Image 1: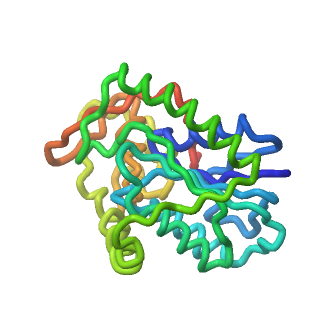
Image 2: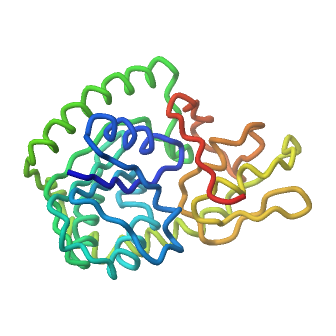
Length: 261
């Protein structure tokens, strides 16, 4: 059975989970969602999966946009099995229910839902774990992904656990939260350590960064993935206010994706 995994990732956690899961499944392709935002046709396998991080209790704005605006016009009649895997450190809160709702809108029912515990990288709120803790999380995640892959191969049916007020939160909170996060780039700053390499411009999944006079500037279409912050080689991107965490050392993920040249 041909499998297509659609993935969104900022720091690399979800990318690593998607690639690790793909390695366990047969005939599987991982496609990064930002590469499809201008696509006219989207290829779907008989088995389709989504791997995405949880941002403030919901899927990233680009993930729900991709589902509701781009998948809506695709022929999904041949899709036999659909799964979703969210990555987060704490509870996924309403993200899995919200994702199910978005997919239901375009006529796609979720067969299997699970989550993989990974380090939280949203440093304005959470402290970055040390390397030992990150190692343990990766080790635990490898075991969890192997279990998930086995269940998917068996065609297991597993519905998302109902979080309190999930229906209300999805209906009334998701879009306002996502819109607020789109403006969060106003909180970024750049220091004199910036060399003007343009990596942040190339890796931004929202194409929200432009280079002006050799320095990055941010618009108001942010996904709050913090890829620019965590992946800056000079650690020159920072915040205008005090934050709790530092940079997330995630080279092990193999996430080097660039979306623009």
